Amino acid sequence: MQMVSPLAGKPVDPSDLVNLPRLVTAYFTIRPDPANPAQRVAFGTSGHRGSAFAGSFNEDHILAITQAICLHRKRAGIDGPLFIGIDSHALSEPALASALEVLAANGVETMIDRDGGYTPTPVISHAILTYNRGRTSGLADGIVVTPSHNPPEDGGFKYNPPNGGPADTEVTGWIERTANELIGKGLDGVKRVPLARALKAATTHRHNYVDGYVGDLGSVVDLEAIRSSGVKIGIDPLGGAAVHYWTPLIDRYGIAATVVSDIVDPTFRFMTADWDGKIRMDCSSPYAMTRLLGLRDTFDVAFANDTDADRHGIVTRTAGLMNPNHFLAASIAYLFQHRKGWRADSAIGKTLVSSSMIDRVAAKLGRRLLEVPVGFKWFVEGLSDGSVGFGGEESAGASFLRQDGTVWTTDKDGIILGLLAAEITAVTGRDPSELYAGLTQELGTAWYARTDAPASSAQKQVFKALTPEGLGASRLGGDPVTQTLTKAPGNGQPFGGIKVATENGWFAARPSGTEEVYKIYAESFRSEDHLRQVQDDAKALIGRAFATAGQG
Image (cartoon, rainbow, N blue to C red):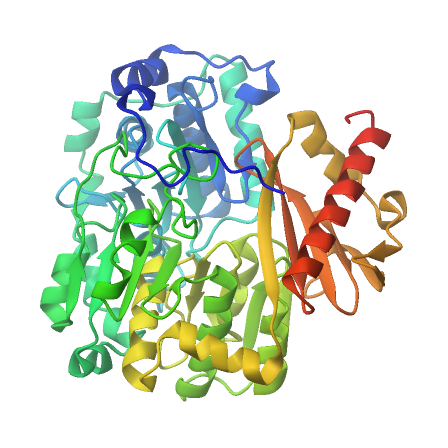
């Protein structure tokens, strides 16, 4: 079981906050060692992430990645504008400066925020898709500078191609290899101009991201129903990129919403510690969400977003913080009954570590289920052409189509999922927790949990070679194993881990793409005690696999 720190859910001692001057100095002064795998460019499920202190997110990385993106654009024939945005992590501003120096030197038409503000991940996706609608040439793409919900000392840098979603492995693999080659050559081949010149370049443009996104929200969420119902909404941006989007949204649509805090501080000193005592802007963690949970009785429904606003955390008056899987199931049940403009054959997309309750909801609705590996990139094509109405991940990331059945974003959008919680409450008179409770009465109760366990880089590599035969799982939670998977049934793609299922439960294990942990996802349709049994069996099986590989 996950060991919870005694500091979890409590304010962080000021002495433990990140030293911002040292962090930014490390960004500019530490040169990564190309021979050290931990200091090379490595694109995980959503871009390159690391810390300047560890030599894994430094200026050389960003200069090389940006040059590689410029070279990719040429090889792919992408010559429209590049939309770039940042979140409020301390390393995002320096990384933006580095990227702009390279983009301007390469003559890339670059769109930065008009007011020098922050730009959520879904806003970049929306901007790309809105610009490209109806175009067959001169297509736009984008960059988001964010490590998502990761701790304050981390940085992140991800590329979204013209489809608006996370780049696929072929593209990220090419960018990764090219960037590492450039670092290995001492950045020979990187074009660069001074920042002052880059900001004044004819190719650098100020763009009104806020109005473009906020003004279009009525096409995807029923904001008039929210306004007319008077449902009381609480919003906590957690000091992230969405912080300056909420007031224009509230003013424009006249909804009864309150932003509980608009503080931005790159140390994130206002956060309570996550399960392991670290600061992490994880809006699906009850420890990180202590502030908003304390206000649950003040609002009919409340929600938070992580730092780049691609994740959502839903708090209801009736049940507190919702398990992300519960909200996904409730959202799916609601949307596919209330979005009459969607195609009759549009599918429900889920990752294979998401709750099997979604499978039961899909069967009830008579909709096709698309079960894919972890990573939102697997939903991009379906959302683009309307063949997938909703795509969601257990880690509280999802997006769905506009009301007319056309694409909204092809990256996760925590803003519309929070607003959807308010729409559900407004239209049905029941909050999402009550809607989910109704589903359990009809479809059964699921007990689900995800735990993180420490894993070294060597142990994380074990998962890549793991096979059903090598794991040797014959029983799980007292039941015979019916299925052991290393590939997702929806598209036959490997998911970098292993999933074991029985008639009454399942577990999946996979290494984190961003931290030195591995994740165990488990679910039981029997009881909470049975869930714990499944989790214990899962840890024993993975521990045996580590030991067999000499990494115990």
